Length: 223
Length: 79
Image (cartoon, rainbow over the protein chains, first blue to last red):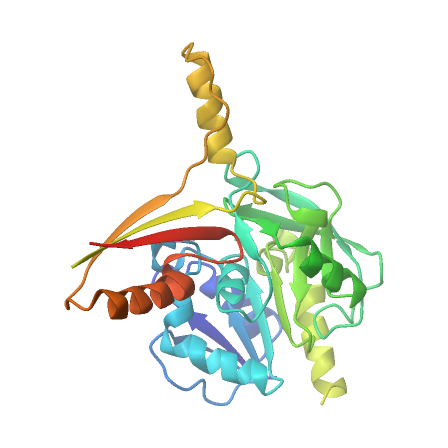
């Protein structure tokens, strides 16, 4: 499966994702510069974590306007897979590829810690290798990870089974303990935890691999 | 001309910064603080003199970039 990782000025998890996809999972993976107009041939786009454009104005607000993100939106509209991790999730929300927004953590602190995340549904290309209710141990590292959306939006997410991951214990004030959601087409996924930092035992957890292995599995199954 | 924009978190959105500053005011014995909310003030210098046209243009900028309507509301003044 071909992966493309978008690089913005200020991205800092791009190489971690590259390592996991390219070296650990042995998949053809390349970087896509934020100024690139076309993505080239990719099956799955990764919008990585970091502080794109210095988090100026709002997290993810500027990145949304980069040429590569226009191409990502087209890719998503055509049914291509997109996963946004941490800052990537914030960017996907700003780009309206996912509903809601991520705001300052309830206690204002930047939180860098291991979390327990419950897989709420396996009906997605990003969780189909998991068991429903399975608890993954993944790290979070964010200051603006508090998921917010209007009650009507939250209801729709719940009704359509689009909350893929919830915190077992809410670290940041996120509405309904939401840690990761997908779009209506279920091909765009945004999550605050970092699966790429937990894909090898030497790093303390391999649970993050479940997300990437789900994507690989979906390559055979979907569309 | 100048566009002056105030962006504030919506009432329905948590504003932990405002809450923290409210506590700080109280701890310096500043009494009677009912609420504090923290937003942003943005000044944009623009060419042109057609106020209505600029208002329309800036409204779009506020809606699409300068504020995020999911969590914020803005007020705009052209001077």
